Length: 305
Ligand SMILES: NC(=O)c1nn(CC2CCNCC2)c2c1CCc1cnc(N=C3C=CCC=C3)nc1-2
Image (tube, rainbow, N blue to C red; front, side, top):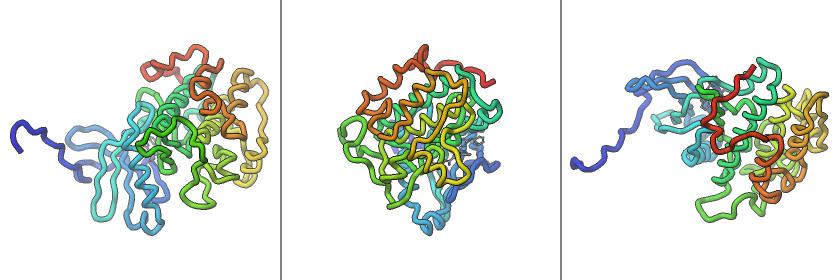
């Protein structure tokens, strides 16, 4: 290499990090808090066992998660810094969201006040607008996957269920004309409380499947509980497909109007989807009155009290 060529950073190895406590466990991954020895910087390192991935036929999910993480570069999402492997494992070195899950903060205070709910809902809307603009559907958006940075801004994680609709072409913005079929027949993607009716009934996924999850999250931030509840998944699915939910007393009308415009059975009729005018119409909803969308990420988040 001559003196003018840029020095390519050397590939990291597990020996570059001190591995600490386990901060998350999935069906085929373990996430550790780790410190980079050379800089002292903390990361979350997701470790995946190669044998287990292959035995469980999860290779395509892991490859897709890495592909999505490499595409996503936004303050409101967990960032992928490095990937490397050894004989037995794959390693994803990710940003560490020190303050953990939004859900834990919600449980501490039972429900958020209007200012907190509006702020965090706006950050989620802004994050979804960016993600959908890249042609990516998250498909498992839920409060457990909305983490909080040192400064208490959101950092959405876990793209293990994500779907990429655009492959670098000049694909028409927004909804695909054809719903996206999940990769495996009869497999719904997502978590019971937040899964959309179209994923349950036609096994198809739209960008607005994430808008359905958003509607469930807005309801939960303001009331403390998700709208569709039950002691068994089947019961929850029944309520979702029948749009069987109620608002608690005191649920403000403007918030109720927003939730009702997101929890719509027809995925092409949800506020914010392409057919309904796109994200501009969602961001213009009265619920977001006073939100300065362009500087959300620079603003000091309201205290969660
Ligand atoms: N599956 C993952 O990719 C993942 N899982 N976790 C921990 C989970 C704990 C349960 N709820 C969902 C997240 C993480 C990541 C990405 C990268 C990531 C970055 N920071 C944190 N931070 C945490 C801080 C305190 C408690 C838990 C997580 N966690 C993760």
